[in-house]
Image (cartoon, rainbow, N blue to C red; front, side):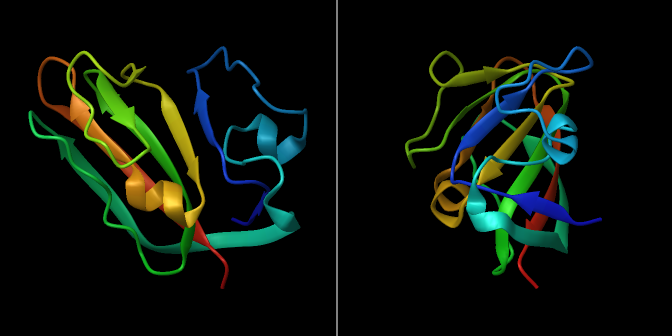
Length: 131
């Protein structure tokens, strides 16, 4: 699977009735792209993770070549921040179970932090980068 990626932004994709927050494009319409990113073709890189999101805020274990992460919140709700500051159960962007977050750009990947909202949550992460 290859993705055509564009700028360094963070996009929240809402479940089955996806709300498109970017221009229409076949790849972007699937919710796995960011607009802009210099038309680079990104490929999967080693580093699929299943994360338990608990009471302490935590980040991602980002493979060296990764430029984009697709994060699906599987169980419970989480909150996140991408400015390097820890979110709390009441402060940060709310992501409900079943939703997907696409995080673009090395700085955003390194600064991304999540915390559970109520009970421990599970999230799956796939990474994409330039080969």
